[in-house]
Amino acid sequence: MRCIQMFSHCLLSNLSFAVPNSKPQLFPIRFSCHCNTFFYCNLIRPEQVCHKLRSYAPLVPLAARSSSSKRTEDTEEVIAEAREAVSYYLQELGVSHKESIEVALNSPNYVSMLIDSVRELDEFSLWNSTDFEKAYDPVPAIPPFKSKVYLMAKQKGDKGMLPFLESIGLTLSSATHLARYLSSNSLFQTLPTLINKVKYVKKIFFANSDDGGHIARNARQMMMHLSISIDEDVQQTLSFFQKIQARRGGLHLLGSQDASFRHLIESFPRLLLLPKESHMKRLMVFLDDIGVVEGCKRQILLLFPPIIFYDIEKDVRPRLQAILKDGLEAKDFGQMLLKYPWILSRSILQNYENILIFFDDEKVPKISVSQAIKSCPLLLGLSVNKLKLVVEQLGDFGIRNQKLGKVIATSPQLLLQKPQEFHQIVCFLRDLGLDDDIIGRILGRCPEIFASSIGRTLKRKLNFLMGIGVSRSHLPRIIRKYPEFFVCDIHRALRPRMMYLMHVGLSKREVALMVCRFSPLLGYSIDEVLKPKVEFLMNSMGKPISDVVEYPRYFSYSLEKKIKPRYWVLNGRNMECSLKSMLGKNDEEFAAEFGKGKMLVPPL
Image 1 (cartoon, helix red, strand yellow):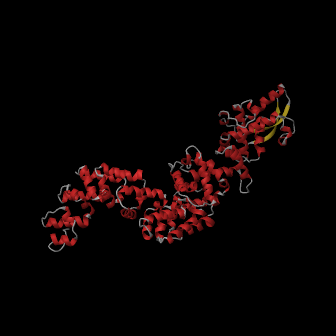
Image 2: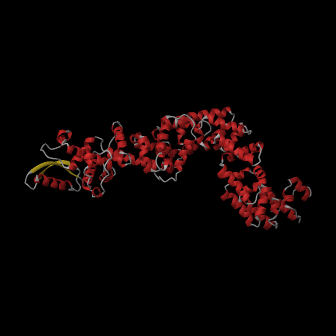
Image 3: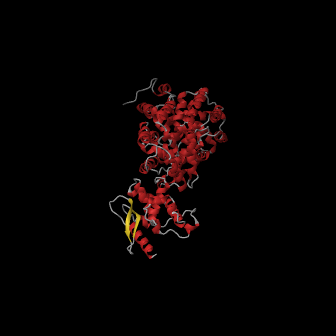
């Protein structure tokens, strides 16, 4: 008994021995014990024992481990030896020393499974009654623990895929299923090839993975505006999204490698069988050719992973030609694909044809339809029945045929609205005192208003006007004359313009009065319109800024073509008049009153 104990101690010492710069190997060795008895056993001599494998905390046992294996917790030494055996086995399969250690450290459930399997055979003394005895030297001996783990890993027959797949984030059950799928496919090559392929897939799908949630927002929009029967590719993509959405953090994690990669591989296992050079890289080159910049390719791949399986010549180019035949240009396709990657799916392409037929029946110009789809390819996910409801609502306000084409080309997002959302905007405008005729004209002039949020956009703009002193009774006139103010940004446009007028000497009340008299004032740029005309008024004409309060329309006239020429005529005759008298007349009237029958040429 003492001899056996001494042998076990010496054997473990030898198993920890490193042979620098030598290839890993399993070989029988003649071992001399302290009692001068000789044993023959198979020793694993790793290329180098990594101390990292021995310094990590014990693994958490699997929930399914038998009660007998739970009686004694795995010690750090046992776990470290098991990891060394896994690392050695992976190196034997061609994996680099560094990568084999990383895999061994990051596959705790696989290592626990091997430990449990070894202990099970130990407990029932089954080593010599199984296929494992074929791996041993015929001289009777109890194989060392590390050898047992190595042989158990080899006996599993997964070619090292199980520990690797677990190390990249898959559960052991998913890894087992995927390893079986990969090993049964004739396209699978070797574990090192698989490792390199996984690295490349991570690179093209998750490079610069912090996208600020942009990919997730696009995914939500694509799902929200989908109302047609879908093909298998889109269905698989939706299933992938649902797996991500079920996690804490939801779809916001779609662009995260740590959160999404596992679900990507589980949803699309064929990714790991695709040829890297002849297929995946060719797709990346094609995306370059159509103008998709490097940092944006991942957005297309994550929003529509099946695209990576498409053959460029057999699938992508024919579908591209089907899209470009109706007024769209090749240079537009890259941006359309970026906005809506599903555009290459069969179901979306079929719906595209249906949409073209629908608008043709409505006598909408093809160029307007193409412009709308180019600007908002999300439209391609809408059913014709959904579009018909919106088009009928627009028709109730006189928006048909060419007018409809102008509206959808200007604001294609309007077609994404639900009928009740459009109706809410109409009711909001009616409540402000606008009748349906005026609402129809506003719709034709500024359709973006009807795709806006009442709370976040429309009410905020009205509150801004009332905040500078505009009374509610004046709002209908302001909206009727200049509905575009609804789509002006408060912080970057409206407020700076009003502040500028107050800065040059007008009171808040005077600015409000000017807006009530001439609401297009809200849309004039400070640098291009307000400032040069104020400076000419005060510095060249010598008039007080208060003059524009009575005639704010002054800012609507061209400085070079009307204001300056007429001022020079008046100045040449030493004549004074109000801004309205100077600018409110047409050329004939002005010439008759101030130019003795003809318009005078201003001095150079």
